[in-house]
Amino acid sequence: MSDVASSQSLEAPPRRWARWRKLAVVGALCVGGLTSVAYHELRTSATQSWLLSRYAASLSYEIAPGPSPSIAFPRGGPFDAQHDPLRAMGCDAALSRAG
Image 1 (cartoon, helix red, strand yellow):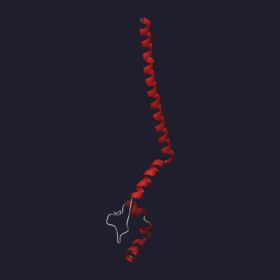
Image 2 (tube, one colour):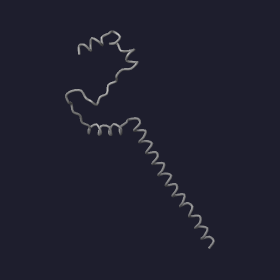
Image 3 (cartoon, helix red, strand yellow):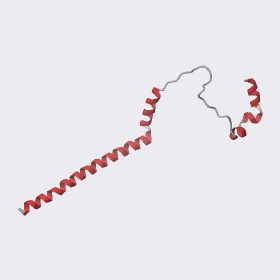
């Protein structure tokens, strides 16, 4: 009887190890698959272009007469005052008078 008990106790651990081994292999395959998909996306941006093209296809626009009230133009700043070539030459006054 001790032989039967010892043979049963020897068979149980390999089953546990087999289960853990299967889980490790499946986990490694999942990680490898996700890594390859992420690498492909980083190199080609295929998923990003697919998603953005589907989104762009759903967009619409219409051209209405007159200026849009929703556009906010900058009033001017120190960079505009220093680097604006029209202001530097004095053309801005002539342009504003001309309309």
